[in-house]
Structure formats: C-alpha cells, structure tokens
Image (cartoon, rainbow, N blue to C red; front, side, top):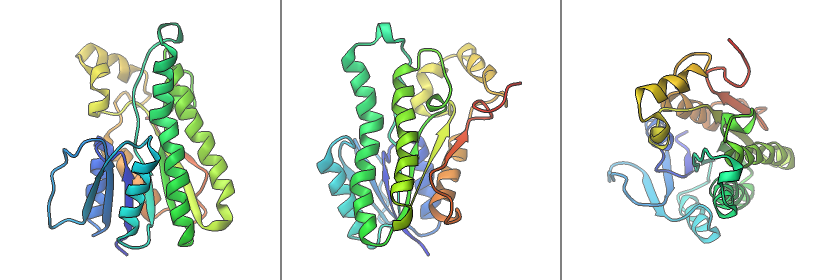
Length: 240
C-alpha cells in the first residue's frame, strides 16, 4: 500500500531523504516547513504547508491537509536544533527557545496529529531525539533536556495509546553529516575530533537515519512501540 504521511520539519536533510524514500513507494506526502524552498514536481504527490511547528494553528493546518488526502498512516517529527553552550553562558530565553523548538513542537505533533490518527483507528508516529538525550555530553544541557523530554514523552505516549492503535517510537542519532551540523564540522580538525568520539570513527549519515524512520513507518512489526533506536555508531552503548 502506498500510504499517506505527514513530515513535520520537512526541510531537514533527513526529511528530504525520507521523502524520496516514501515517494519511491508512491506514497502521498505532506510537509510542514518554515520556508517553501523545496523544489516542486507536479508529478509527485507532495503538498507543502508553510508554518511553524511550535504553533498549534500551523500544525492543525498541516494535519488537515494530509488528512484531506485520505487516512493518515504515519507522522514524523523531524524538527530539531543544535545548541552547544554551557548553562552559565545561556540566557533563559535561549533555553526556552531550545525547549520550544524541539520538545514543544514534538508535543503538539503528538497531540494534534495523534488525535487525527485516533479517529481512524491508529497509525505510526516517529520522533527524532539525539544521542544527547541519553548520555552526558559536554555543553549539551539545553538540547539534552529537550531530547530527553522527547524520549520520555514517546514512552508514555506509547503506553497511553497502546490499546488504541498508535505505535509511537523515536530515533536518536549521533552527530550526523547534515547542514544543521555544518558549524561544528567546519574544519578537518573539528570533524576529526567529532569522529574520534564515535566507536565507528565516522559520522552518521542522513541516509541511515532516514532509512530507519522509513522502516518504522512502513515495515516495523506491530509490537514495536515505545522504543528509542540509537543510531549513533555505538556511542551511547559501547566504549572502544
């Protein structure tokens, strides 16, 4: 079956690969993006909603746009940010922005998107966390709080909706070679330092993350719920 999917944060590098993977199976796609700078192809089943994932009205519009095309089979939350700064150098406003961008947008996706999917008997939701959500990394306090919150929310939501047909999981990538990470990979030395902390001694690739999300949406077994898949080259679980 082709499927009907909503991707919140559709401009991210991972979301773009995921979109192509889903389109290869003739799926219908709706993207919620901040800026409409994606190439449009009238031969492909993509609808683009421009908006802010932290705003209820924008998310409601995106969910409705996707639902107008049929039963909503899956929703992906691909919104994120990288803020590496110690607490003593971060103002309250900066911390709140990290929480809003990552955690608040995830909660609204769960709340608004989940309500729509419940009306149709369920579906699959995937949220993007980070390796920083489960291990202590230097100067990652704000993003750790946000991503750790997402992981806890996923587990609770999976329990809440287990009997109502919703399967809710998360992926937790390590540092991935994307445009979001470009500032902390700006030189060969910075890249080598980052890679030295990963047991595989290489950065994670956007294709690897997108492929896993695609699997969770379309092929994972029905008993897969409440899980956080660590896609971090072993960083969160092994030491070499």
